[in-house]
Structures are given as structure tokens and as C-alpha cells.
Picture 1 (cartoon, rainbow, N blue to C red):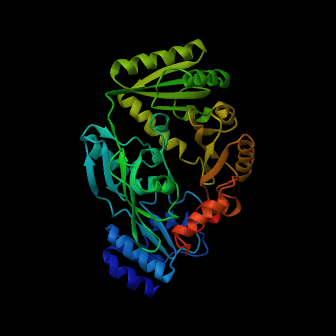
Picture 2: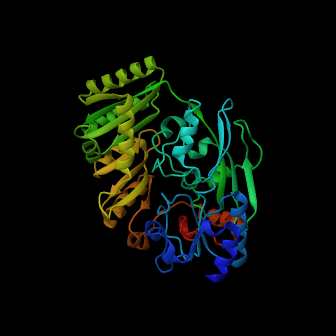
Picture 3: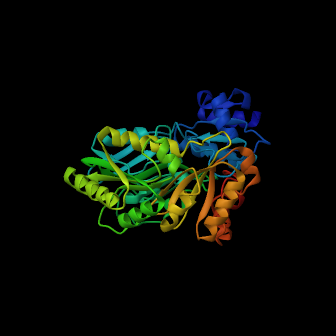
Length: 428
């Protein structure tokens, strides 16, 4: 402990370094304890303020074989497997500056610790936005969003995190600074490490800077909500998927989620349109007519009501219904989404990708749902759960054949296995 304190404290300074577990604030202890194997608590938390300081911290960790758990604000630190034998938690939340906003080129480059909400406020001044809707909108950092591949319903129109990344800077396990991609949309130079690092959960390197493409802010938006029986909702979803309508967000909702949001009874289909006023009005009306023809109840939300609805929806679906609740990410054929939602109380599935989030109540339910989804070509991974659950169940539930390749990649980037050990698929 004294060696760690001496080395790292001299790099970042006393104000950016918390030594000894008992000195860490209780709120931070709770977050960290939800992310690590409880047999060993980390010695300290380090807050580098620059990429160069981060590189120096990682170089020291590499030389001394200290195991490192990288994080941003910690809002998604308890996602994935339990990290094992962690010596040092390295937070990037103080590496948080705007590097460049090329308004005319529709790109922005920021440091990894910048809050997502802060970046959106900066972009809004130029009538632009980053087309992601991650969990924990106020506290999530840009680096954490990339590291966990965290986006939501906006993937319907804009794709996932990796689809919007143009460039990345990261610090390797040995402390070397590396870059890939660039700051322009039509950049094709180098290896596409952006896709590799997206969703890698801090196991390959520590992200310090990213470049995203951004989009003009739409003139207006409106949301259509249809509710009713499973068969009619399924037909409405099929019609929407096969139509010329272009929602930016479109999800299927479970009965309890519909009820908790005060949207009505039965399953739900929620679709958001963002464009010029005439287009939003016409598309909303057409979808509402589809619902009426199928005997579904329907309502249109606009302006502040629309924004509030989507905010609450994001909070509800990622809030466990009890302390023992288990939050799962799933993938299913879009045509089978309604059938899955009829079996759970709280759930949301994107109609285009078939990806979604379920709130389950027990390990038994997790196992049963995973078996059903895998048999149909899907998957179920645990995001958030009590530590005891993660100790007893395979968090990732991976059944593919790419694990040997994943291990080879891990060896190339982190041969000493000091970065987030145990957090990724197969204990990587």
C-alpha cells in the first residue's frame, strides 16, 4: 500500500488520490463493492487530470503488476462480471475537456471523462446533438458509454455507439498512448480499434479521448403510444417495420412498464418521430390510424410531455423493482419480442434490432429466460445484480465460438492481465 501511495500520489497529486479503503467515501465504496469480488478491496482511487498522467499511472501499474479497474463516474461500473483482486481504481472523470467541435463538419472530440449531459449542452448551442441515449443521462461519462457500448432506443435511426465513433485515443496496459481513426467522417486510415474498444469494459485499454459524428437537432418531435393485446401490438410492430415511416426510436413495452408509466393497459408500442413539423404530424397520424384499425388505444405526446415520457421510460427500465432485482440485456429476433414480453413484468425491446432490457426477480427466472432465448438464437447477459448472484451465475452466458480469439486479443493488448480482470466474457 505504501508503495502504491508513493508512486501514484507523486504523479497526480494529493488532491487527486484517495489512499486506504476506509478513506473512500461510503457512496463510492458501495459502487465499487458492486463491481468487484468481495474477497479483496482496492487500495486506492486515482483521478488523473490529463492523458499524460493517466499514461504515467498505467506505466507504474504495469511495472508493479498492480491490477487496475478503470471507470468514469461509476454509473455503469457494476455492469459485467466481478473484477478480481483489484489494487487500484483509476477514474477518468477529471480528464473531461472539450478538445474540438467542428460545427461545419458535424464532429466533436472530447476527453473521456466529460459527462454526456455536459456534451449535449455544448452541442445544443450549435443546434446539434450526439445521437445516443445512454443509461444514467446525467452522470454517464463519454468514456464509460463507449467502454460499455451503452445506447438505447435511438439505435432505431442512428445505430449503436460504434456506428458513431470516428476516432479514439487510449492508454495501453503498459502506459503507452495510442490512437486510431481520426476527426473527420471520411477517415479510413489505420485499424478500426473504435469498434474493438466499444463494449470492451476496460479490458483492453483505458479510453482517454473520443471523436464522434454529431447530427443537426430536429425541428420538432412527437411520440405515438399504442396499447392493447399482444396479437394486435405484434401486428402493429410488423406494420411499422415494413412501412415507409421513419421513427427515430421505436420500442415494445411490457404490461407493467406500460402501467407504471400511466400509458394504459396491456402491452405497448412506443414510437418517436423527429423531423420538420409537417412530417412529424403526418407520420404520427398514420401510425395512430394503424393502431385504431387493429383496435388499439393510442395517444400522441408532443413538446415537453414527449421529452418527459422518454426520460421517465429510461429511468424505469433500468431501475430494479427490488434490492434483489436483476437487470438483463437481451437479444431476440424482433418478431419474437412480443412473446418474450408476455412472460415478464418489466421489459423493453427495440422493434428493429431485437435488443432490449428485462427486469427479472430471481436466478431461476434468469436461467429459464436465458435457455429460452438461446434456443431461439438470442442471448441474455446480466448487467446489474447483487454480488451473490454474479458469483453463482455466468454473467455473460456466451455460447459462441469466438472466445479463443477474444483471449488472443486480450494477450496482445494486456499480456499481464492487469486491466479489469474477470469483468468480460469468459473471465477475461
